[in-house]
Length: 292
Image (cartoon, rainbow, N blue to C red):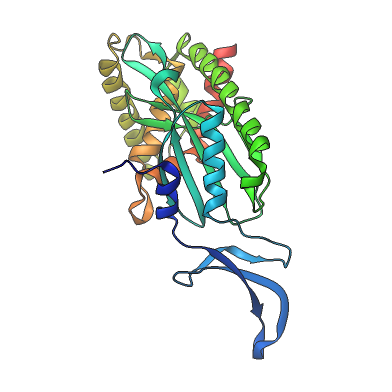
């Protein structure tokens, strides 16, 4: 049996179109607004109405983005994807892009994340990393060159050259990202101090806040101890770990351990973690302390 291509896999997963239909007011009163609907089940898409000028993108436009990413990275990529008010695609370039951060057991690999939503935001493509030691997948949004915006339009197949250029900048961003991560690995921080910077100090008069803080910090510390063993590091001395470990401790907790509604899938958890305020704070302080 021949292997299914990424493009064919995306077409099969997103085997429906999104169509624009006029919206009516009371008594079928005509309006200037339109709604977006899936053509297979009639489900409404997006958080609101759109104008008459809006042209919804289709699965073939997502395929064009994936093709451009593959050309830019000189790779035949593996892909995972899901649909939630838009198309989300996670691309895995070859292991040739691997970067060792500590020894031979703490490695990161690039991941390209494409978000093609049905809203006012442009399409977004970001280069993040997969850390094999803890199965964390993270998008560090505060490193220059790791995200690009692509104008939300249809007919992206006709714009391949400009798309390849956009994704080419993400390949350069991967080099900047790995440099920042190496800087984080080279500096240490006390775990307690870092967690206080990220999450703040709980209200001493609130037993609930104290319990949440205690349980969360303990879970993150258990994660750090486990990852130290996995990556061949020494046991934690004086409560200190590298900034790289501290960031991953917070990000990993949010991605894997934080309570989510509706049994969120692992891919959805990655997106949620990338948009989480505490992960953003952890990234900010880790980068600032590494540069100090």
